[in-house]
Each structure stands twice: as C-alpha cells, then as structure tokens.
Image 1 (cartoon, helix red, strand yellow):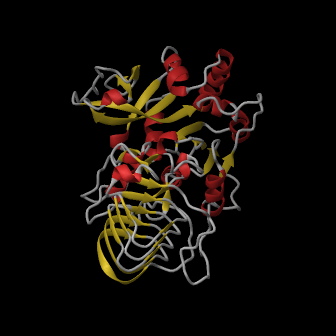
Image 2: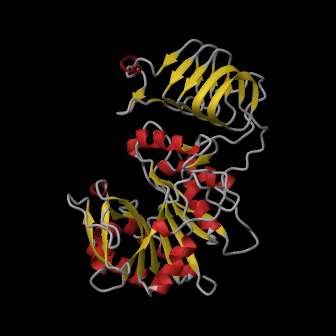
Image 3: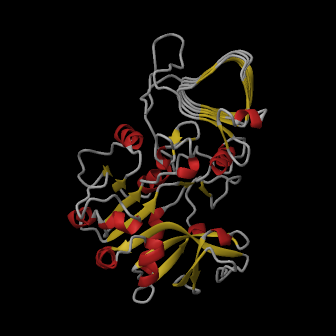
Length: 417
C-alpha cells in the first residue's frame, strides 16, 4: 500500500426499512449499537485501522443524525489534507434525482475520484457489524493483478441461498454470480461452504471510471446486479476470502470471521448478545483494533446498589436497587429501585422508574418508562402500543428529545441526535 493512493467511498444512505421503528428518524448506519457505538463506526474503524484515511461517506435517507455523529465523533487531522471523513449528500450534478443504486451513487460523485486521482477505490457498505483488515484485501488485489476484488464471506452451504453467491476458480478468480440460488455452488476447497458477496469492493480507478460511465449510458444503477456481471466478460475479477482477514488482537473465544447483517430487529437484537458475557463472540475491547466512536466527556457509570448479571453499562448511567440481566445499557440512563430488566437494550437518556419490569425490550432514546410498567410479558397487549418483531422483541420508539434522564436538572452531558 506504500506506493498506492487509496480512497474509500462508503455507502451510508440506507433507509433500513426492516429496522423500523429504530430507523423512523435516522438512517440505518446511524442506529446505535452496543453501549456506545453506532453501526457506521465499525466500517469507519476498519478503514482507519487499515491506514486508509481518505474517506467519503455518501448519505441519503434521514441523514441528519448521521451527519451530526460524523461531525462530532470522526474528525481526523486538519493538518494532513488527505486525512478526512467527508459526508457527501446527493449533489444531483447529473440531474434532479437521488442515488438510484450503488453504482449510480458512485457515478454521481465521479468528480471526487477525479479530484483525488487514486490508484484504487474501495467501495464499501456501512450496514454490518464486523472487523476487517482492508490492507490485506488490497495486498491480495495487487498480487492477483485484479481489476476488481470482491470481499467474500464463507457461509454454510445450507444458508447460502439467502445471499448473492460468488463462484470462483481455485485461485479466487470469479467465474459467475448466483443470486440467491436454490443449489449454491460451494467454495473450491470446501464443499460445505459457499462464498457470499459482502457488497464490499476494490476497483482499479481507471476500470471503475470507465465502467460507471458505460453503466450510466446503459441506465444500469447497481454494482452487484449490473456492473460486475458485465465486467466478468472483459476484466479480471477476484473474490477475497474474508475468512483469511483476521485482525490482530483476537482472543481465543472470539469468532475469527465475525460478520453480522443487522438488517432486521431480530438480527439486531441477537447481535447484541455477541458483545456481552465473559467470552463474547465479538470482544470490542481490543487495543490492537479499536472500534472508535464519540469522545463522550461525561462521568463513568455509577452503581449505587442492585443485582447485575451479564450486562454492559454506558457512561454516566445510574443504577439504584435494580435487577439487570443479559442487557446493554447505554449512556446517561437512570434506573430506579425495584426495576427488573431481562434481555433488554436500553438506549441513551432513558429514565426507567421504580418497579418497572421489562423483558426482551429495546427502548430507544429519550424515553421515560413509568413506575410499575410491565413490557414484554404480554405480547398481544404490547402490540396495541408498540412494535413487536417476529421473534417477539418489543421496540419502544424514540421519545421526545426534551426528556432528561437525570432528575438533577443539570441536563445531558453528551450531544443529542
């Protein structure tokens, strides 16, 4: 990577309709995850840890929350001109329309590529929870003299029908694509798994620019559906095995090939179980590969009393006489005596009053759960007021922003959406 200039274009305009009501007022990449992160923080951290610092973030739907998060949490060096994360809304330079697909989004921003004149353009999504050393993918791209390299996730053959499958030769060169096939073609060296496309690509710049111009003339808008299948006939496309991209600092109990699509409420809820416990599948404490996020300046969490079993607590949270099990509590949450939380995700600035009991509930920001409320025990009743997922997770939408978690009147110490 020393002699090559690489820029990243990250697709962060996802509407996330299957994640509603969490995406009712924010885009999918801006949805909070864990005790202090947002979904977008994972792909951004991967690039920063991989020493790729020129990053454009293409936004579209309900983008203000994401824009504010990037502005306040992701400021790189103002001294070095090639180190930045810039938010790019639709510029409509080629007409009065928003991004029509992944390829069209990059086409509408070809001027950014022309300004930077990179050797390689990384086009990545921002909707998944994972860690990846992208420099290793770049090294593979170079070694194979590839025109395009596609990140490929090994998945069990029985699950591969849910994905776009990449069929490769022994050396990784792509032969064909299969869109959610009934009988997926297995990997060359393992007939129990198939390669699923992760939607993350490396392009040689000259190839990308030429093909996007041609795609625009053909009215083709998507990389996976339109551009890449056509490139197979004329260029060298390779699949990079994500399973070979282990990051430094992994612990023995972690999943070395951790990648989760958190596109539904149930998938999002289940992924949180992977970051708690004594041996989490995804241990976010890794000094060799940190996940960066906001630089919150508030105090640490305070436990006055209570019973806490397998939980993660965000900063400035106060717990007084509550029982909490298998739960994630984000920052500036107040939990009063007698509260019981079981398998819950409680987001920032929530106040749970005395004696309330919640089970398998996601509480979005700025909510007050009144004293004695019971949520998650009678799903038929909960459906009358809240969203309930197919898997039985109750979701309480984001509350009013003026609600303060603290009773002191001091107000929030962090920034709000």
